[in-house]
Length: 333
Image (cartoon, rainbow, N blue to C red; front, side, top):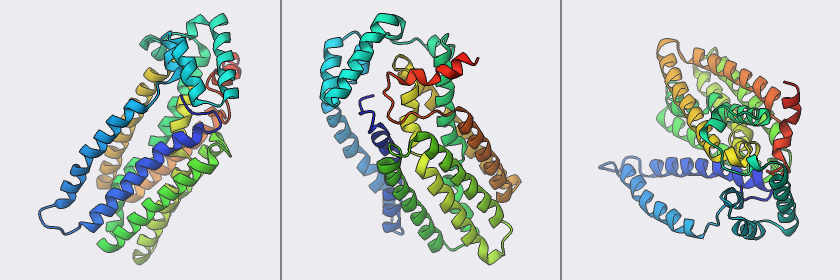
């Protein structure tokens, strides 16, 4: 909500980058402390949570309130002041002009929405925005990244030594971090959201296919085949599915719906991820890894079709203008 329109993807994409950086730091800390008596790996991990949480809590006092939220609360003076502080002068003037137009012809769009507005919206454009946001955030989880990252060490461990599994896992995490940073810094606001999502899903589909094929390799080659499959899957995910939804969902959902809608979408998609982890875990036991890889390949193919059909480009579009992106879809209903 507070990012300049030309840098919104960059700043939002850093959410994913910071998460992956935390995974890599955690994995590196575990590797360094591996074998330390009395389980100090857990102690060090928990000991860092308190100071970091305190630092974040203190820093929140210096974070300005969202101008768009202030506007919804009727605090127009503070909203305008924060807007001019956060954005370049020309962009702030454009947003203020959009606000004035909204106040003149759509007073119902300038107040905070109820839960009924989110769950059963009467506005067709809002429905399309919510469905598209759910689809994009859903693809991030349904592609199977959480399940693969959960079971990847165990899958690799069936065909390689503990040392080789640690090295492979660290390399894949480092590759994921590198791709996420490159995508967040150069591609999201340069290439665009839609092409990145489609390219990302092609990458995860290719990685899933390689994982399926690896199951038919010679026993001594399965580890290398799975490593390459995991690497391509994770790199494909990191270039688009990882960083893009953090920007895209907030862009397409109207401001008055955003807080409740994003909370609902996050809850639904995280539940999907948990169910998928459970399904893949049970699948490994009763059907084997090859069946799980085929299942994930099918899911990624379906996600690719869904993204192709629903996702519209939002690069460089102001949040106030994003509502017009779904006008064509609304008129075709």
